Amino acid sequence: MSNQITLDDKGSLRGSLTFAFVILLGMGLLYSLAGTAIGRSLFPQQATGSLVTHDGKQVGSALVAQPFADARYFQPRPSAAGYNPMSAAGSNQARTNPDLRKRIAETTAAVAARDGIAARDVPGELVTQSGGGLDPDLSPAGAQVQIARVAAARNLAPEKVAELVAAHTQGPQFGLLGEPRVNVLELNLALDAKQ
Image (cartoon, rainbow, N blue to C red; front, side):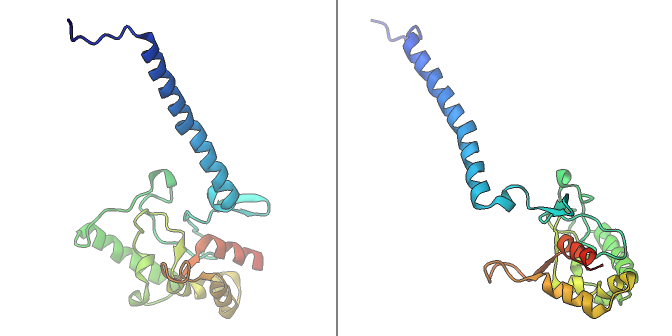
């Protein structure tokens, strides 16, 4: 009597391959389609990337920062990824890294000069990158230090710009998660609509 196992049973090979194909089809295709359909029906805006449209044209995403070089716009946090979502990342430099300290000092001086404030009044978020490098939001303080510059560049009263900042300030999510924040893209679009 032999204890060898042979694979000459075509039925069990066929059954195994059929099972593998059904699982691959079910989990690879049907599960993905069901997840997408449920996401689009329950959260249509978020499932498509929270895209923002202006005058019928997509101008960005509420979830991804983008650069605004013009003085008429609020500036987001700096990006280690150059605002490129495909290479999103922080700088990964330690607080003690001399290169980081030098960059922060240079950025602080540039932001202070740009916004006409003292270097000590520059919020840390305007000179440091977020973990992913694409944070679309600022704290209200980060937006408030830019109000005078934006108002002057647009020939608006600073109070009107401050009202827009206040109107676009969102509280913590569900009332307890996170900090108050201002979405820079949405605020800048509201400024454009004002003029």
